[in-house]
Image (tube, rainbow, N blue to C red; front, top):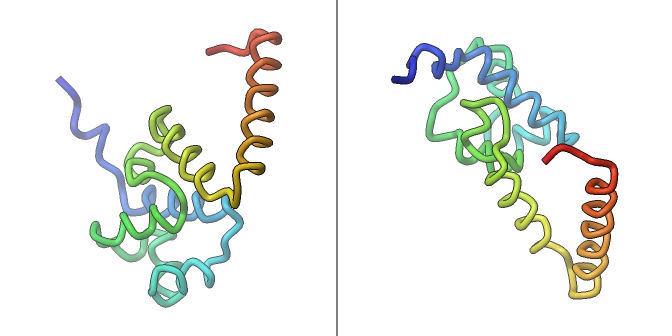
Length: 120
């Protein structure tokens, strides 16, 4: 039986994860606030845990920050989520040639990692 207390995320933890995701993609607080339609003060208060993040906003935040909603609760991105994120980015590539180049790069990296006994 799962201990539900371990799955509870505080407002501060949630805010820290929002900020971490924002920082990871290099988005300023102002740009994020514009993208989600909130004022910058609200975003600052979300990130510091001073204001409760409405649950309905999390899907919008996740989309803008390019993370799955589960990231805000679990704090990490699962393998299936990474597959989904990678596929979404791949689909955004402008043409077939760009996709072929990226595919070659991924294959080369995969081969290199296998040769160097990178853990699976």
